[in-house]
Amino acid sequence: MKVGLFQDPTLEAMGTYMTRLARRQQVVASNIANIDTPGYRTRDVDFRLTMQELLSGDQVRMRSRAADRPQVMGWAPISVEPEVFEAEGLTMRADRNNVDIDRELLKLGETSFAYAMITHLLRSRFRTIASAIQEGRSG
Image 1 (cartoon, rainbow, N blue to C red):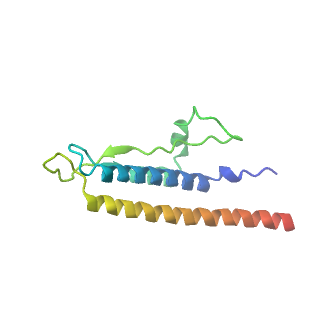
Image 2: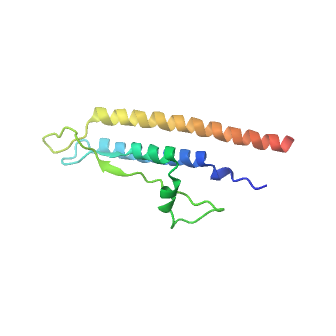
Image 3: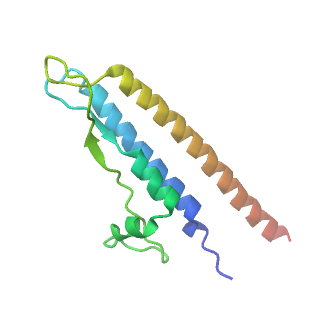
């Protein structure tokens, strides 16, 4: 019996979410780094779309963007690049920069918390897999 441990939709969703969290952290860091750059516009990552894709099981649309990627053991990695956009409705300063340090630090904290939470869930999932493997060996 062939078991595809790494074709688990839950693991794929967690990996996608972690990748998108990492991208969000990059975007927030870029916003903070450009806080004094005249004309810089705050960017953000659309996490509502991310969660809708993951929760609705919209793997078909996500996979279609990865058609050119190589397959490894029958598994093709899905495109996990989130959509980055300019944030709307933020207060513009005189230098035409709209980065708000409080907003960015809050987003950084939210992202760090979410990353720690998903890492914990992944660790638990892998412990379950390891336990199943150990039980199979001894039984």
